[in-house]
Image (cartoon, rainbow, N blue to C red):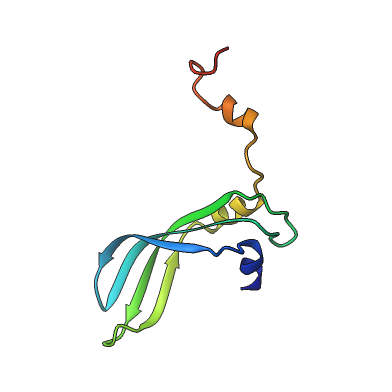
Length: 103
């Protein structure tokens, strides 16, 4: 937990995008995101937004308390976003529309 608090000092927000089913199993699509402004396991901060999408299933009891949570997401893509350096302006313009670039 302290690794995340160091890497994301402003927090790592979650946004529920869609809800697919109701109790006793609540399934939803989510987006988790934050700005990497601190180091992560020896990698320097890059200041860019890190985000990932996934699906979660909450198993709830009669009082709507979560008894079990199952998360599904692509872990490799998520971890790669921590380690990638921000795109440079040159790289960003090279990937843009060739008509708008003023060759």
